[in-house]
Amino acid sequence: MSISFRPLWILLINKGMKKTDLLKVAGLSPPTLAKLSKNKPIDSRTLEKICEALQCQPGDVIEFVPDEGKKP
Image (tube, rainbow, N blue to C red; front, top):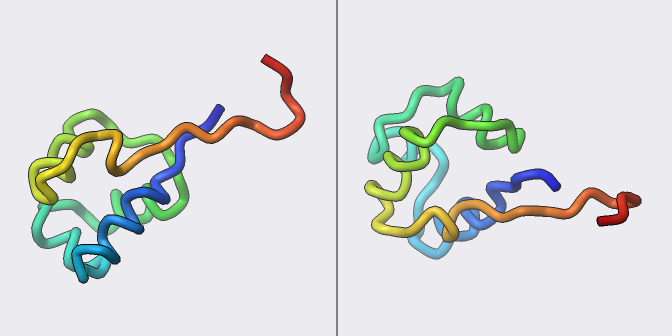
């Protein structure tokens, strides 16, 4: 399984925000935004900043995506 930040991008759209807005309100760095855009791992503090800034829960910004071709 892998992590996807697709729910985060949907949440931003629903709030009328852009990725650059997320940088400002959550106090993230451009390299962290790049990690998010590429579905790369982030630390729990970053996730906490995002959830605090957007007033949401971790499940609102991440999802687990099963790897295709792998059996449980």
